[in-house]
Length: 318
Image (cartoon, rainbow, N blue to C red; front, side, top):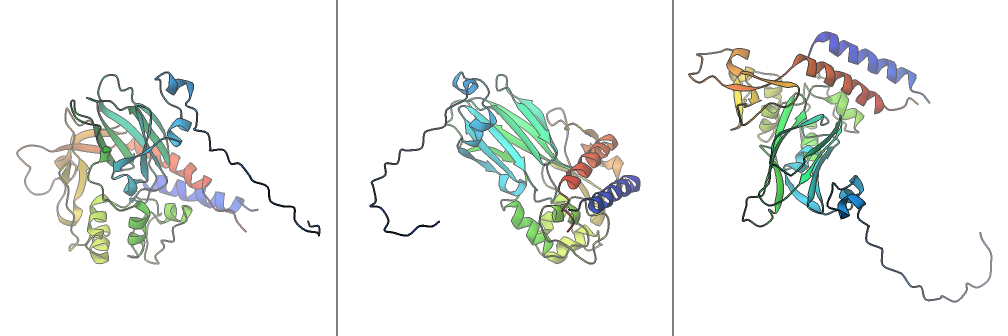
């Protein structure tokens, strides 16, 4: 992130914070009469849902909540409306930042995936039917998480409608609070404060808008010392990548990036590049590792969206 962009965001937030100011009668009660309570009517399906078309948001809100692996850690849930499924993410993820975008990587014919996205509230809906498959990338900039949903032919409807790959099982708020209790020296404190998380540290540096890195959040499970050593890139800090990631750099300078190839495309705002060339250390591998890296223009777009998001959540002055 360039210093110019950080300074622009900080100035904008300072200006916003400075401008935002501002029966009774006596006598005996009448005898009780029996009251007949009618059962609540079932919500009527929309015309589109009744005809087999795409359900409305109201249909999904009243629909059954489905099991979504990794959803709690990302602030996401899945709901059904007829044979359609919607995965929606709102609020903060365990990265400490709001969701931004979705890209459909691969989808079976006839399932009609639809995407709706704005910073802090994104949704993906599709027709979930036997034999269908859907693979998508959700972006918590600059991190991306892949979603997989499959219903193999000849199998009963899956109990887990979809899964986010390589995501912890704990809820986002639990993981954020665990990270905050470690008094991190780096972290998205400004975003957290705007979302009512008390996560301040006198040793914090930077502008408080960078997401926690996935490889450091993995170290959080080991302890606060490991988490902070990873964040500050100390020589003793451990950084490990998972199966779907390529490593760039060595030791504390390791970064993990999602693999890309003909079957795993990079989402909008990312490009598939040689991970070794980004941080060449040690000997070049025999097979060059290609991974998704964020583009400069995507970073600019994200900073503009984040500026508006933070301004909209700025607390009013007393």
